[in-house]
Amino acid sequence: METPPLLRMSGVRKRYGGVIALAGADFDAEAGSVHAVLGPNGSGKSTLLKVLTGVVRPDAGEVLLEGRRLRSRGPRDTLAAGVSAVYQELSLIEDFTVLDNLVLGVEPTRFGLRDRRAARSRALPWLERFAPAFGGRVPAQERVGDLDPGERQVVEICKALVRDPRVLVLDEATASLRRAQVRVLFDVVAELREQGVLVLFITHRLAEIRAVCDRATIMRNGRDVTTVTVSDTAESELVELMSGGPAPVAAHPGGAAAGAGPAGGAGLGAARGSSARDGAEAPGAAEAGRAGAAPLLEVADLSGERIDRVSFEVRPGEVLGLGGLQGQGQSELLAVLFGARRRAGGTVRLGGRPVHPRSPKQAVRAGFAYVPGNRGVQGLALGRPIVENFSLPSVGRRARLGVGLSKRREAEAARAVAERIGTRYGSLDDPVSTLSGGNQQKIVVGKWFPTEPAVVLMDDPAKGIDVGAKAEMFAVVAELAAAGAAVVLGSSDDRELVEVCDRVLVLFEGRVVDEVAGERLTEDTLIASAMHVAGENGAALPEPATGAQARRAEAAEASDGAAGGAGSGGADSGGRPADETGGEGGGSDPARGTDGGAGRSPSPGSAGGPHQASASADTGGAA
Image (tube, rainbow, N blue to C red; front, top):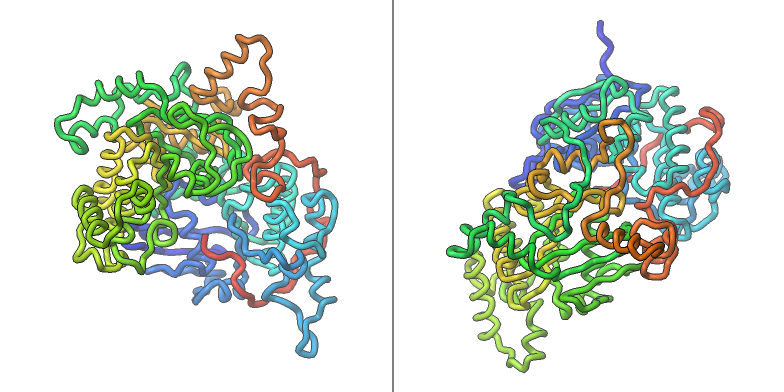
């Protein structure tokens, strides 16, 4: 009789409104193995594992653990069953000590009171095992808020291990770790494998998959495609399986000038002439005009939290995409430009003038607009009337211009914008929450029309809306671009980037590693570049400069020894050393991935093993 796998997930389905996250996915994994779950953005890999951990409740399907059905009402049940997870988003309480965080929810008790000695003996072995990741110390009594981001992530990993899991989920858990910390984690993973623990691993770094994983399941469009043995599968084959087509080599287009639109590319640039502005000039002429125009937005060596010396230019009417796997600094870059996060270095010029907005209010006055993907939290006041939501960004501008404010004037202005962008509504006095998701998102975009923005920053704006609503929303974006705005669009959907953008910058760990345009602007190229696939000779790809960076580098060489160019080891343009963090409040940059100098961990098995499991509160939280 065949022994069932430790974990089996069958026919798992999950839908969010019009978006199908999982479409009948199946997944098997064996005890004592490290199993990667791979796929492009939106493939369903994280959703599948969140179903396993109880964070997401599926619409259909079942989960079997050791042949028995796992009936989970939430993370507490799955923890009790032996499934523990580590996410990139932390579940720690910053004002608590490391020790208190590790045992939170599973505190040992004696005579009804907390047993601190037992808690220490339960958590301390894992802190000692990970001591090299803390620079050789054991920070049991240190406050979590005083640790750097990489060390906090290590605490999160220890917290999952204290629960003695039979299945450990690592969902982008290495994203904020330095190389030395990753080495310690991988040594521990090897020990867990020997002890029969199943480790499920999601990462955007293919080199990590090859270093630690035994098998990999590839997902696309909410379905499992295949499962392969990692040692028998080339990186290019993994990318081909993820994209559904031949894997191109990710390399920078030599000689491509920043700001130049695609040569004959499709997408929004090719569609503007018909769908967005009837009777306008032909697409080719429009692209040529944009290429000859002076840059409207110029960004040089911009650094901040999770972004590292990013440079690019955008011309009037151009749509520049920000691609790469999620969590590579795209959202942080847009937030820094909009003044919502602190800038640590670099310069931004708008229309040739330097700008440094320190708040969203200052950014709006400078000419920026911001369209978030999380419209319910950042884009709209859901409980307020439609008319107020239309008016919010521009009411201050009208007041400064001396235009008297009245309910009638606000309603007229809102009605004009609603008609212009095709918003369907009952009454302008209705709460905006009564509208469909697509109409809500059109308001998030269209409310900026009266401010006449020079630059429109968009952070995954089509997330969670259906195909028809997405097309209507991007028609609004096309109109903004046709009016001369420069659009910077971050998206987790590669197809969206291909269809909408003139160029796409691919970000990897906070840096621009590729600029894709013209015939190279395909989903396959974006996936290969996002995964940082090696070239044909097997060597790691160089980190290519954008056109703007390349021109500055050439100018630096011509000036015979000009120092401090983009990517140098010196100080950045903000006067900070290149090795220093860009994040708020100090600490190491979580996206840099540089070696922090910690020594290699002891050999596997040198520390105390896992401890007795018990039910606990949620350690992960929805990502």
